[in-house]
Image (cartoon, rainbow, N blue to C red; front, side, top):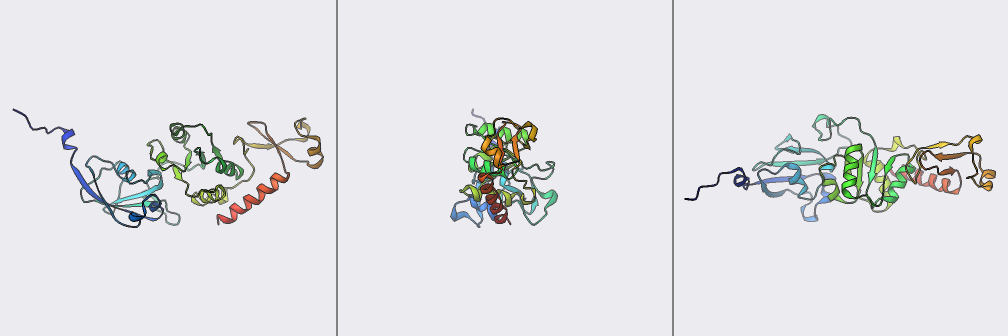
Length: 262
């Protein structure tokens, strides 16, 4: 005689319906017909809130707070029949303190790692003085691993990359033009007061230091030495910088980014 299967696997097939409401910029990840509206969907009863939310297209790194029937819960919480979930992005003007899903992770360091689509943004961030790592041949797995191990903020144009479990600090860059991407990142992470232009090598991310006159070598063209007295060198790759026409153009761009980020 066949016995009724009451194993956990069979019981896990139970479906529960929950109602979502996403706020503010989280709607960027939803199709137009779902934005600013309640969304009802069924899941297996063992589905975590992280998996349920990301199934709708929203990376967990974009979320600061989840309220289940009015009470804050973590991503590991399981879906519950009839639950109403209110999901919020990072707040810029409201201090939610210990309610935040990002609380308790120590001091925030504004060090970045960027995906293959953001090479120019990488150079702009370095120009502004921020620690930004980039390579056009790093895999998604490599990027997630670096973000996790070095606690770097992962910047990407790929929402799927931010759904990886190892990525705890990340941001989906909305703008497509690099200058506006730089403005967006400065605004998002409130970096305006932390900008220290021309402190890093645009090519390799190394720190730049002044070159004492007695240590200037033959790598500096004689005609350049005649027109300039101050020179700087990357402590990592050895590249030499001076305040030529390229410096004036970059200064204009830095000033523009700062003005736009107000």
